[in-house]
Length: 113
Length: 114
Image (cartoon, rainbow over all chains, first blue to last red; front, side, top):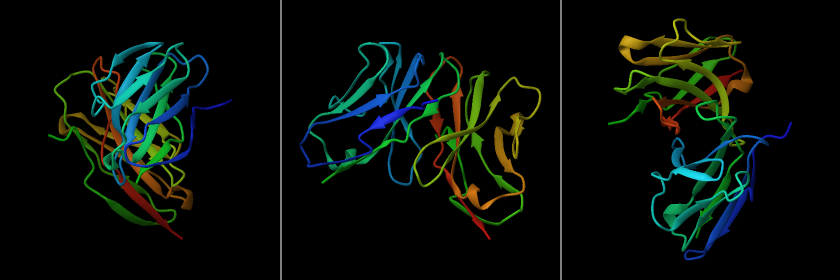
């Protein structure tokens, strides 16, 4: 069966550009998470959705980061006016229900020049 | 304070030997879950094993076992009979109480030598 997919896999942006990263969770999975993984570090939580509701956005580093999941399936993480410190791998994960195992996608590697 | 501490940034182990990857955690919540994930060079996080704070027995999944010492707040991963394909980054992680997010450690890079 299909796992979590993310697109694009690689994105290069010039400083100041806006980017949009897409996550397709496993079909039927209710919970969706975004994590940011800097080089050589563990993933850090950004935000969490239960269906279309964004229940926790405490990890978003600034108001330049915005995430949505309007129909409770596909999610988009948008970063406005990208900065060099935004360079990282952005991981998406989904789980069947709240509190259950999270299945991760392959990530999007963002490089801001 | 660090919630998850992995003190071994890198390890080199001979193929077929057993490996222990260290993890200590910090929480005041009596209910929590502990995870280990493997991240190969391809980048995907692969779930390995889970231990709940109220589980009476140590978790096992094939060649993976979790040495859970609650009083010491320790959750070491043991890989028996290591294989070349085990070479990867390994992350210890925790979910606290009613929280949904997972908190990860900094990881240990494991190299299996032929």
